Length: 539
Image (cartoon, rainbow, N blue to C red; front, side):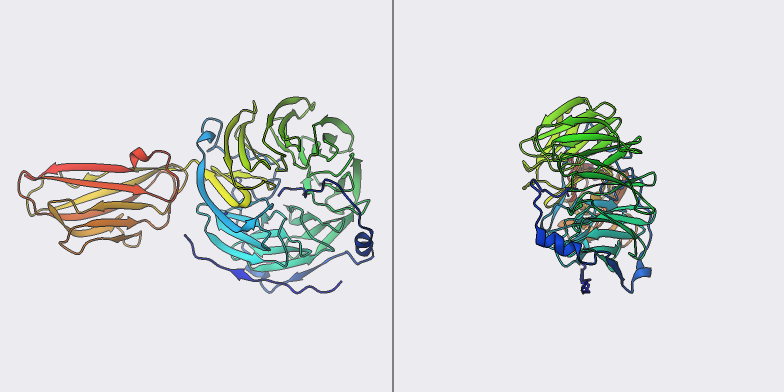
C-alpha cells in the first residue's frame, strides 16, 4: 500500500457547533473496485506523530455524550435532568455554527466541548456553551464518521481512508491508521480499544494509545461496514451491507455468530442481553446477544437506515416510511408511532422521558417517550442524516452546520443603593447584582445603565475585584452612559455585580432615579427580570 502523507493542519480561532449508517438504498457490487480491494493488502497500519505525550486524559462527566452509542450502547442519557417532558417545549436557539457546510457526522460532547466532522474535510472542536471554534483539523477528504472521545483524545474516521486520533484539547494529531478504503463508521472506544468499520469490508480493533492494529475481521461478502460497532460484555456487534449482523469476540475478532437479514443492516444497540437493529428489508430485529437467535421482528412500511435507541424497556427507531416507532423491547409490539414529513434516517436520542430525532423534512423533533406526542420541533434548514445528542440541558443537532438548543438563562437584575438617606455632596454607591437563575449557563452578559440625573460619575468596579469584566463610562465628575461587559460566562445560581459610585449634586428635595438593564448572548426565557429601577430623595 502506498504511504499516505499526513495532513495535520490545525486552525485555532478566537473565542466569541451521522447517520450511523450511510444511505445505500440499492447495493450494487462494482467488480473492479472490490476485486482490486480484495487483492490489495488491507491489513492497515498506524503512523504516530511526535505528540503522543501531549494528550491529557481528562475524564468526561457521566452526563457527557462521548460517542455515537453513549457508553451504555443504547443512545439513552439517564443523567439528563434539566430537559424533560414539562419544559422541552420551551427550547430555543442557543447558538449555531456553519462548520464548513452540510454534515452527517453525529456530534460527541465531552468536558464542555463539542466535536463533529464535516464534508469540508475538517474535524471541529467547539465551545459547547457558545459554539466558538476552539480548533479544527484538516483531513484528506470528507469526514462522515462520527467522533468518539476518550483518554483525552478524539478518534474519527475520514473518507481519505484513515482513522485519526487527535489531542482533544489542541487538535494535534497523535496517530493515524490507514485502512483499505474510506472510513465512515462512527467509532466506538471501550477499554482502550477503538472499534471501527470500513468501506474495505473490514471491522478493525485498534490500540487507542498508538493506533496499532489488534485485529481485523472481514465481512462474508465484499460490502462496506458503515455500522457503528456496539461493544458489550466482551462482544462486538456490528452490521454490514452484506445483510449480516456479526457478533465478534472483542479481544480476538473471532466470529461468535452471525445473523442474516433480508438486506443491509444498521447500527445495533444492546440492552439486557438482546441486540436490536434495523434493516433495509423494512424490519426491526431483536436477537439473543449470546446466540444470535431471533426473538422477534417488527415490520415497518419501508427501509430502515435509522439506528435504535433503548430506554426503560422501549425501542425507538425511525423508518423511511416517515415514522418514528416505539416498540416494546421484550415483545416487539408497537406502543406508538409518530409521522414526520419525510424519511427518518437519523437515530433517536432519549433522555428524561423525551425522544429527540431528526427527519429529512428538515425538522428536529422532541416527542413524549411514553405517548409519542410532539412536544417541540424546529426547522434546521436541510435534511437531517446525523443523530442528535442531549446533555447538560442542551440538544445538539447537525445538518447545515451544527445547532444547539437549550432553555436559556434567566437573568435577574436588581439595584441596591448603599443608603436611602443622601445629601447634596454625598458619595452614593449603587450595586447592580445580576443573578443567573438558570437553568443554562449565561454567556457574555452586558449591563447598561447611566449616571443618574442629579449626580456625577466618581468610580466603578465589578464584583469588587479588577479584571472580572470591562466598563465604558464617563470621565470623573462627568455624566452619561455606562456599559459593562462580563466577557465570559456565568453558571446557574451565580452572580455578577457592578458597583457604581456617584457624587450627589442635586439640591434637597430632588428625586434621583437609577435605571439599568441586562442581557446576554444566551436566550432568556423571562425578560421581565432584566430591568430594574430605584429612586430616592435628596434630604
